[in-house]
Length: 221
Image (cartoon, rainbow, N blue to C red):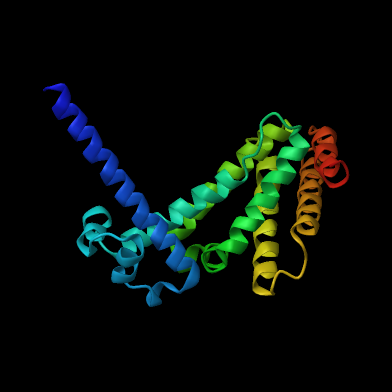
């Protein structure tokens, strides 16, 4: 195989990946604005600026691209929580939560469907969202210096993420009645309480440092 042929294949692969991502981005945008039934395959292709048939080529059908949009949104939600690794852990957590809330507010419809769908309503959508939740828990645990594999911590951290999601859903459904920074303060208090509850379940746990880190984010900007 010549260098020219290899370069041509690389270029085509890059173009295909770019087209595929454009379709996913368009799907995220449209499903954030409208319900599943109100979005047509033609709408997604038009928004992406690609031929109608390419959507079927890459995703098979509307359900296929919807699931990819959900996975992409879930991955983005997790990535939005990333912040400058050179910042203290407390500031990283606070900045990540604020970015997380702003992303969900900008994609309100899709965010609400993710949070409110429930496993029974759409197991595949729920599984994609749940995987993102566990990645968030693992990231937070690393920053807080705790082990998410300890049963009591695992259960209560998962519970706190669920509470965060429900609080965020209410916030979005009711016109964002509180500013982002106030929401961050509240959500951090919920997480700190969950850590204390884990220590109540498992007396061998010492969560003092982790709780102090959570509360520092509320008071030390």
